[in-house]
Length: 133
Image (cartoon, rainbow, N blue to C red; front, side, top):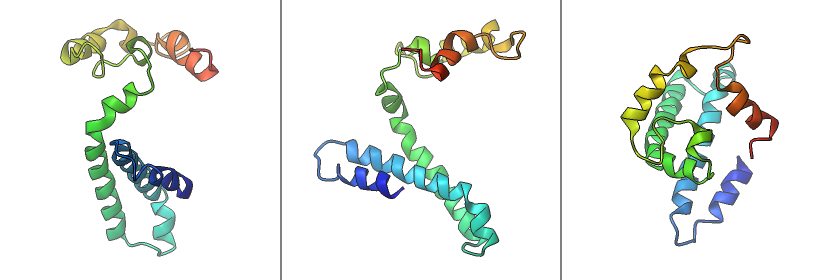
């Protein structure tokens, strides 16, 4: 966390909007990890249940704030729509048409013999093996 924040802070003086987006991601990352470790913090009385609710509330708010940057962040990886296979993040902007087409497609609804979705071999497996690009 310390290293992440230090790298984000390096961009603070830059005139671009990069710092603000990185800071939002850093804040969400920190809150997410704090929330994940909350059980231990509560058990050892470092925090109270009220603190836990407050952290979760802040995390949800940070996710809402980050929402406006999500499409740009995903686009920054340069992955084509074919790889993302996203109904709502498509370049053509046809969100609802593509979403309902995906929901109704047999590719999503049916599992193969090995219990995985039909797109597993074509899309997910190459990503996991590092052979997608």
